[in-house]
Length: 638
Image (cartoon, rainbow, N blue to C red):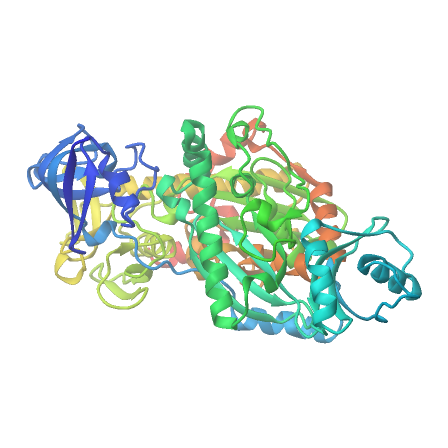
């Protein structure tokens, strides 16, 4: 096999790869994190690198002739044909994501509820300390039978079981502890008591579990003290599956092309890396973690368990399972106690997953008599409407615009992204720009895009159809390669050395995304005979939601025009719902009840969805009566 030397800049990393290797795979295998939203399908144009040497690029519409002449190519459609030097521009390097792991306010809220007994700590596993009489010639029961006898003496008459791993350790643990031993038990109604761990002496002072959010983009894990309910520590990271695409559809396609095992390995690598980090910080061994609850969308849950997700994207969109059996965590690949139990939050349908069930559990929508609308905004917009009597859910495909995809200078909420921007009406100049991590910006993320669009509308830079008013005499408003655009940041002030812009094509993509979500709201409300004015609360979950400017979101027609005090940010409701299910077996059963009673509504088959969607492709909407405060602002700017 002929090998080629690949020199990667600016890291000055040198590797050898087989001739004919796809450049993107060679880079990711070498640990180089590079933006590739479509997972290497050649349809997003994000993985542009500069190559010098021997390579064979495919023709692509995502690069201009000038860029090609400068050595730019798409890594996913370029083959390595000989020694090659590749420069990774700053704009495509994946920086540290701004990961929503939980806030101090959220933890204080949960601590207060625990203190007043709002939730009872009753995990599925518990520890029990036993003092046994040592055996003698007159009392010669086996070690396991001595355990069973002690249970009967305590009034526990149910069947006691244990696995071979526990049985192998039982004798030494009893003798090492001088016939004092701590057992970790799994108890469920009408089931045998299962011993899953044995420790010498009294080890009831510590009982640990994991609450895991398996996000499409990021993974967040809480290490939880199951005795006090306190979150001991938190770790988070980008989901390593991102190299196979940013969204679930890209990953399902990747899995269908022989990549299922690879996707399973990547998510487990991410999870186990975070478990190692938590163990180091808490100074514990992985074997001390004896329970885990994971929440993720339906595709992520399938991939975590190594289940083929192919049918999720094929009509009639049926997943392999929505309610998953409790399994040994090591069977799934978690590096924890060999007998630890893993529970995955129940899903509702192919596109309403365990993360949404967890969100409803965390928000207690199912206990609230008032009407609540819940939204988790990402590549998909998952919506739940209901109260203590009924719940209905829907998923609308918003596309990647709110996560930086389909936007020329868009990027994830990572270091270097513009997350807030305010545009003045005089001179059409940005008055305020906030960049994640500070310094010069690399691009703009979802919350910044929404701010920019709202600001451009109020300033009169764009009309209600999202068209840039090129007749305005401002250097920031121009046409480039025949496409109208507005310059947010000049090249001299950007980290890329290029202008950061929003184009009419970008604006159109954002308007399609917000139109799909708002149409989803309207259809769900209408089908249930409800109106926005009847809402008691509007809950916003997820990373984008936590940093969203409500006024900007209402102004562009992403969110309904209701009193702002009805909006509430939930943060990472998926991981906190998993935390609650970890904390209490009763809450775990509540989660299953939530998933069971939640009716899935398919927006794609609703006869009115397309009409509502088309009506929402204006700023904020074709019908300004639905947005009175926005209409008032726009009128005042005339």
